[in-house]
Each structure stands twice: as structure tokens, then as C-alpha cells.
Picture: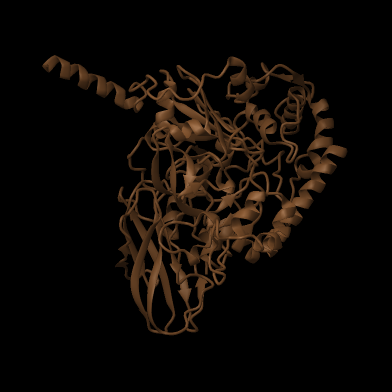
Length: 198
Length: 426
């Protein structure tokens, strides 16, 4: 009995840091079905910061400039440095280019070039959400070209650089080291340090 | 030129629909469900006569004298809850705030077609129909949902009413399946540290949440206040991530991927980060939990007291950390404080109604409330926040940068004529 309890307690202690991930791992309700690999592939549009999930295709800044003029400039301005002023009934399109050197100032201008830490995020966000009202219409090669254009306009890559699944994650963003994770990492029922809010 | 021209026209058309909606807000409120569910821009404006002729005995409507409605603000398209009219702790579903990131209308999802996929670092990827999810063991919990930008000085410093300052928080009874149950069914693998939750909305909104939080108290909800979740707040399925910025409460939930690191999508890598002037340009990622906060809803900005005499000061308090332990109210601009009575039971991570008896002597008075939560965390003053930020308090009068998680004490000034005004920055 004693040894059984020891085993049980050890098991519980080991399980706790993972918050139950090691507990009750067998399905108990047996509802839902197993999706096929093709179904998961079709649904899974996640791209991680190392570029896992990026599809084949490639593009350059000059190709991107032409697409930008047709699909993006109407809201973000002719060069991406303009953005769009707030207008009645309209969502404001953010400035995409410029702002370097303003992040530590009292009025930071957060753009792709001045603030975004990962180049993959540009590709991912445009595939998900751009252009407004025509989301999902940009093909992988167009997305690589547009990403190349925005990186080039922000002075991060050369005009001739080719962006693809291999090169894009390797682009070093200027503000990559401008972030710190919230400390301490969140745990249930742990107080936040003084000054966490707002 | 054609595609974006079309997009722009459609955009402007939707803008016009919004204006219509805005003008017709009084009429719309009385017929809420029929109009909102039929969704398209045209029917919103035109629906008035159609719906008023509808027999409302099947699905009742409120008294014709009741006219409290959400305000529509922009950009982006968003509605704010009329907290000045709130009673008790539950927000009527039709008055729940909604921030629509991509459209004026919610996505039109047929619940029979909707699926939830759980995959990634799991032993058994699973795909659920809504019917299957409803067969699983369910729970109901009362929680607030608050937008990270609620009451932020940039958007709200010139606001007059509590609806305009604090209307991006609402509180509902949510019913659904604990996410931990679904993750256990799928079997989370060693090495998993985060989940990525994704919406079926037009912009495929996505948010990473630490696995600890996902296993702790996150709900996959299909019910709101005794009926299905409203379209604007996630029908037919949404995440409720108690006490964390609204953006974690993924609406129109369609996919959960279990992963070893966050996806660092736009929302979390650049949007909802904390950037303070005294951090030398370093921004904080994943500072997701909302702090202790409260606001007096009566008397509040834009209201008028008819004369001296007895009033019950009342308001709402909440904290992302858990239970509200104490609310103090000051009627003299913060010189003295009295404990307000809390409405029982006090729910964890929920709006908590507080009340304090007050006799107004007819002289100018500044009313404010201060919340303390179960961790002993106290709602700060602007002076406290300024100290943390290393700035002069005037900084918040002028900054153009959104200050997320703003939870400063909110003062209302009652003048001698009985009118009540926002005294936060004046």
C-alpha cells in the first residue's frame, strides 16, 4: 500500500507541471472523427517564425511593386509610407514603410520595417487577411513578391533578392531583438509583478 | 484596376450600410434578433417595417419604452455596451460589445456545416461537429470579455459617457466544453507548449495561447445567456479565455493546433504588445491578463441628477486575476474612501456589481471607484501608472499610441446643476 501511494504521488507531481497533459490521455468519450491527412493539410494555414508551413513559390520586389500598385495602394498609399487617414465609415490602413528609429521615442511609428520582428508574419498576414474584402485571393508567388516589395521598400533586402520558403525565414528584421516575453511566464493563480498593468 | 475598384465600392456600400445602421439604431434595438440574423447590409436598414410586423410572441422583445442601445464606433467597426443602463452583472446578449475586425456583419455560418479541427502535437487529431460537441460534458460559467483597448486614453479621453469610455466590456453566462477535455480526448504530446486558435472569419484571425492556460479554464462555448452564442460574438462556436484580452477569445472558432511555440502572427508579434517609453524601445510580448478594474455606471458621464437627496451609487468591477475582493468608492475626489457592498455571489473573472448609498448635498462632487482583487492587486490611479511608465501624467492626454490594459481609476464630476462629466483628463 505504501509503495503504491509513493508511485501515485510521484506520478501526480510529475503530471502537475504539464497541467494535466500527462493525465487522462486516453479518449473517454470517443466522439468526433479522425480527419484525413489531406483534410488537415487543407485546413492548416499556420506558418511558424522559422517558416515551417510556407508553400513553394517565389517572388521579387519588382514583381511585388506591380501587384502592390494594383491590389494594395488604394488603401495603403502609392509607396506604403502614406497609410490612410481615418475616414468616416472606413477602417484605417496602417503605414507599412518607414518609422525606423522611432520605436524608443514617445510617439513610436510602428511599421513592418520599424517594428515587426519576423518576416514570415508579413506573408502569413497577407494570406489570411489581405486585401480587405478580397482575402484569400493572393497566390503564394504573389505573396512572396509582395513580401519582397515591402521588405525592399523598408531597406531590409535588395531589390533583386528572391523571396521563397527558404530565404524568407532567414531575413533578419531590424527590430527582431526589440521584444521581451512577459515575465514571469504565466502560470495559473500566480500573482503578476507590481506594475504589470496597464 | 478592376478588382480593387470593386472592393472599394463594396467597402463604401458597407460604410453606407453602417451609417444607416447607426441612424436607425433606436429602431434596430427593438427588433434586434431578426434584423441582425438576416445579416446583409440592405436588410439592416430596410428590416424595420418587416420585423415590426412580425409576431414577437414566439421570441419576445423588450418593452417599447426601453431604448438602450449599443453605440457604433469606428475605426474599425465596433459596438460598445451601454453600461450606464446596466442592471446586475449580466449583459443582455443583444447589447454585448462586438469588435468586427473585417466586416460590418459577422460571418454567415451554418451550424450544420461548421466543424472544429484539433490537430498538431496530439496523438489523435479530431474533427467535431457542433452536435458532437454538444453531447460532451458541458459547463456554464459567468465571465466578462473585455477588449484590450477598453478605456484606453487614445480612443476615449474625450468621451463623455461610460458607454464611450468603458463599453468594450460585457459579461455573460457562457456554456460549452472545457478546452482541456477536448485536448485530453486528442491526447496532447510531450513537447507541446502552446495552442493556436483560429477563426473562420474573413481575416482568419488567429491567436496563440499557452497550454497551461488552455488546460486551466478556457471554454469552447456554444451558449450565451441561455441560448446560442450571438452571431456577432462568435456563432456557432467561440473560445472564452477568461480574464485575458478580448483578442484571445477567438470567435467563430474552427481550428485548434497544438504546437511547441507561438505562431507569432501579426496580432501577437506586433499588435497587442506593451511598449512603454521607459523600456528603451523594448516591447513586451504576451502580457495577456487583464488587471483589476472598476467604473461607476450611475451616476456617470452624460447623466443628470434631478436634485439633492438620496442616490445609490452603483457600478461594475472586474479582474482577469480572479475574484473581486473589495471595491471602495470616493465621493470627494479621492480624499476619503468607503467600502461598497458587493453583489453576491461574486463570480471569478466576472463583472461584479457594487453599490453604495449616497446623499448628494447639491455641491460639486467627484465620484470614483477602486477595485482590489483576490491577489491583492489594487486598481491604479493615473499617477500610479505614470510612475510605472516613467512619464508625466500629462503624457496620457496627448499620446497617440494606444495604451492597452488601461485600468486607471475613472472619476466622474457631478456639478452643482446635477450634470455629470468625465473628469479623467480635466
